[in-house]
Length: 550
Image (tube, rainbow, N blue to C red):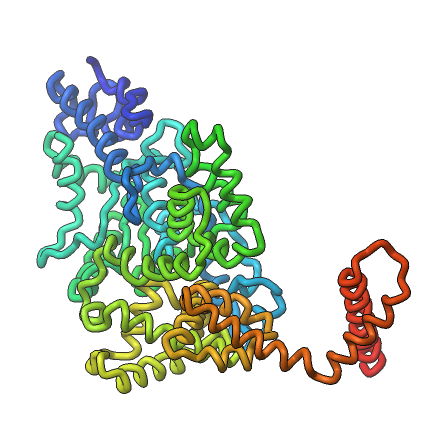
């Protein structure tokens, strides 16, 4: 072997490693790190270490195994191109009232204030030397960082800078003496690089590394300030390199040089692509599992379930659920309860963030009760957005009035944990929050009604309110065999509406209007057609009167 040209075409697991050549140079030179020339033995060591590094990165960071998957899957096999939002466009409404108005004008189930410009994630990574990627739990921040590293390792990858990626999980920064340079050097030393510390220093000085710092918010609280200081100093010292870090939202202003962007929710095309990527086995392709899963999500009765699919973590959950039985559960309450538990507990366990005082004091069942009270109070008042002070006040009241709740916890810190660590509540504008998905608020509202046996009030107040339709279905699912009692209450309430003079008059009119019709249509169909015509006429008349009075 002479020189380092073979490294430019060396491939391990389908991933090329040309970027190492730029550090060592062709013709057997390693930028003076081992003198002007390298002996044959050193060349061989470097060649093997380079391939081992690529292999290690691919095996450690190129697979995905979450939510109890039986087997890991290759990240690249299911990866769906992500879109990023400019952080300046995220909180683009000033107050709670405006958010409520815009939501209702949208006529859909999404908490979207307006269309924000989006860019492909890898394009943004190519354009920004210092990048902070923000987003809630499970939106794909870690996956995006890992994928960017994989692209950097490829000979013709989409990441356009010839740099060596180093992926560091910040939650592992737990020691009293945090030395980022030594941590990076250990990554190279593990792969057998000769004089790994010298190699690391030279690489950093020459700006040859892409440093991926994942999960700033997962750093233990007692170490956070120190870690932020160490990272900031490290970035300032080695500012020729490129850095991408991720964070759920908090501490986003910690790094002066970094441009803030946020992960956008998946749109329909991304959801469909993810499902297609997920079900790609020969058997799945033969029976068109992906097409059937997507078609099922498109049905109106699954509109609330599809809402969860806009978050990659919960879309993964939906794919796993569908894969087990080739359908979604008939009892949607059980589906949403599992989705909520993923955010409350399972995902947090995988991320190892449950060691703080808040999670030890406020266990999952208590948190569900707290969230259900917040959800119900807003939904019952036809409000989807909450001020920070309002939520904190509700949390404090809950802690004070619930005998099982820990009294010493801070209401604002609990809100931060729910919003930042779990993503169940999301900050939509400055100090304005909503639930991350309307589906979750509806489920928690139903949970509150079920736990407090508020069935009579539900039926008498909201039976004919379309906004509560999903809540009725969820309550019946939670009641299980007791749902017959709910149906009896609904039948009784419906009769009170049917027996009103106005409705009785309408029924008589429909009978009389269609009695002489000779059309070959069943009487019930004729009456339905008459009702529709009457409704259209009434709407047109109301619109005419409104215009006349304008």
